[in-house]
Length: 252
Image (cartoon, rainbow, N blue to C red; front, side):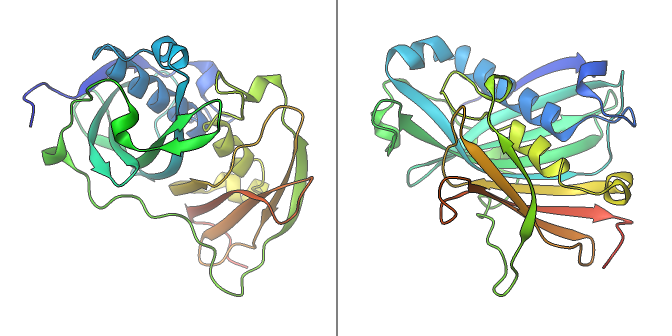
């Protein structure tokens, strides 16, 4: 166990990180979470460039995000993150977003895997040639569970997109934060007017530049919407699955 404090950084939510309601976009929060994780590891001497030089990368497996209240444009916030330990091949990382008074705005539990970028395969934690400090005593709860669509519930196609330059990152695939935009783009105007309280995304396979993603969704039931992304080239190839919970959402 280490006495070193979790990584934290403060920032003001800008216009490019806000939506048409001047609310903090979920994808922008995921981007800041990714940045916080990179900075936390960098202070331990594990930079992104060093990882790339070693042929290694991180792949997000599941994000489980709870939003207590939605932050707004120009809010001053603090994002804390820490590695809380491993479970099998999974690296577990938690996050807390707070306001200037220390009130929790959002919390997230995530699971990651170490990846051989050339072979595109998962590696065990021992394959990382660096020490990662952990804070198991600060756990926010159980490891996030993978999203599993309920039996008998079949999402219907909503729209399609081609993965472009703007969605990809240094690992050569669509960045994890972009999936939040993909999910929100599948919502209706009435659903977007509701408050997002929970977003859970499981990433099953990567999708790379110039590949087609077929986005499917269910009707809203008790404020819950299930979203799935499939490969346009292979309908049996599921890219991601997500569960969104909305308050004051129109129930169909």
